[in-house]
Image (cartoon, rainbow over all chains, first blue to last red):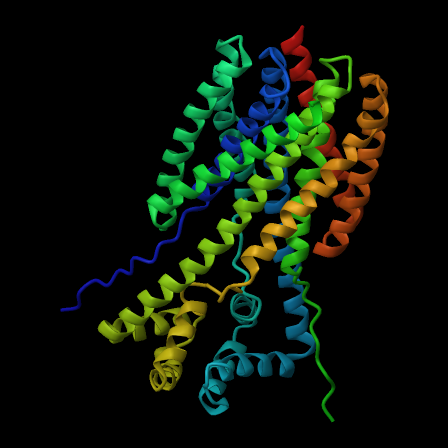
Length: 231
Length: 231
């Protein structure tokens, strides 16, 4: 009786990756911008305005950017596949040699790999798929992913960007709001970094520390720069 | 005589990809933020302060984020490789079956692929390399890339983020500065999009149009939101 063999290689799903991309920057950049501005102005009105403008700009830039990147990945796959089909048609011997070379790089002799080439040649479409994966390392992308990816990144950026701004919306003194924003955001970054570590398969505490540190450094740099400029 | 066969599959180098990542957001977000703020305040001082704070925050968040992403990619590869080594040790038959299954998905019979498995078994390290590439689709990442990637993304973000701010540094009326910033930045985005299209292997004019459009939409949304909030 054969036992079922399941390997636990961790592959983070695409949606988790998109959430992480959106949240990493969404928690950090509006937080740091607001912190920087609060060192330069007394009231919180302008901080909130700038924060919201940044969230709109950042989520659109990252979301639409993600959309176009995913779209061009699909187009890239299609055009490379066409090219590979042409190559197979016009230069079959070269393509065969390429497969033999790939196997050769794993110390597999031409005598051993030749039957594989012969089997592939019987079905050109399958041979093209094989070349796409093993010569070019390209997987067929999901055509529906472009829009989903854009929406996930933009939504995650906007939702997490609001968190550091909340204190500025409720407190009129920018210094008091800054203090509360620092506490709330660093705690959120720590929690987010921990979860990210769990999901991505890294050490969660290290990930929590790193994420918090990036937020702190970014906010510190923005604060310092804003102070320098207004002084 | 054999002619030299060189395929022109386009693979954008990692450094070009990092430059594109940094410049896409670097040209768009500070531009849109400045545009948004200029609709809410009369003077340009606060626009420049906010813009510089955003550039510091954005470049650190993206740069350090890129650094950690590249680092965790390396760690992921190392840990997956260890796991694969253990699997090979403890469940050799299963691993052999996995290789046969991979070939089978390309319509290659067990009789044809069995010699490949036997050849790989002679050298376990090579077999692990083979599994990493063909089962998991993981390439060995360059350990030096993490730092280079971080510096490239952050530098590109900061350098391109300054461009839309230049008019606000030179002109005291925020409305006049906005007009000049829109012209300069949209032209730069168009030029950048065209070059990106050339490098990545996409249609350059379409890429130019898309990049310009994203910048315009982001700036428009930021402006609208800032107006809404200050009204």
